[in-house]
Length: 437
Image 1 (cartoon, rainbow, N blue to C red):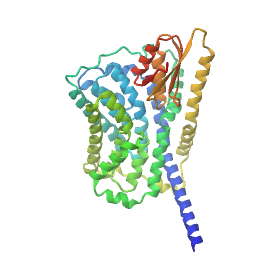
Image 2: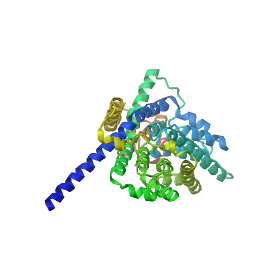
Image 3: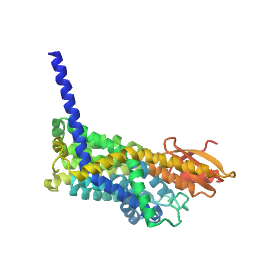
Image 4: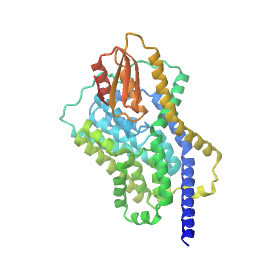
């Protein structure tokens, strides 16, 4: 009998692993067409919407800059690691505390890619309510910070030295489209791919291995369940897109749509890394308001969904995890899934090769008058950070080339720059700089 028990246990483990893989494949199939569309739109926004446009509209007090900051932030496909230095740079370039806080709240909670993916897995009502909740929470939080900052001396607008640039983009339309495709399907995938994979795996694990009874008992106390989701979401550090399959899995296990919505909003916006940097750059009061705005807005909209809106709006379609056992996938989503998997595997490699090829090219074209300077830059976490630091350094007079190595957290420049101006420019972009010399 012991041998038979071992065989049964082994067979059950194989069955569980098979269920996990089927569930994972089904979720990917549901999301992949919309994720690819979102990455493409993200690339278009990055290339065709200049960063300096945001800075120009976010200075000054009052509710107008706060609303503009939220509206700017909602479609931007930036996770917490990318939005933090962007917000710090906006603040240092003259944006008000309220507008900066509004931008910080709205941006990581949404994005064109996550809105499209939300529609694919959770339906149209979720896809509409999500940006609306982000807008309400961002405006409320930004307005509260702005009110609290009255009487304080605001930071004066500083001339831009950090990369948004005033020069006109001279590339042709085809050149810009190529840059958009590269940014969307290489840089963006490299940036958020890890967190997307984490979200997909966690969702599949919840679907297959967590007993329904746990969630059913927790669902009897919706407010307590929402607070529990907030406690779990804060250290999780998941991106807006990666939170979607997790929310779907919670609903499939019996939790209410409102509880799942709290995961969608709190997970991407409130994490320890964001709070530490926010506290250092915005102050303790602004950080507390930030956290309260995110949590209260998420729970308030969660309760509205559960208590006031028709439950039929939030019924999931054919549950992917249930249908996946038949492996009857449609052709187009399957092709999109294959493309997405290839991009997830290849994008980090392609991104590193582009950096190395640029570095080799610039090293080969150095002249004898140039010097090479390497700085340690902390706070960089994604291709967006890399691009911002390179642009900030390139804007310094005397710089010929600027190459960031994300893995080593270094910036290497060639040319004849003023070292203090270089350090100041990168610092203005929102990063901490250490000059070994």
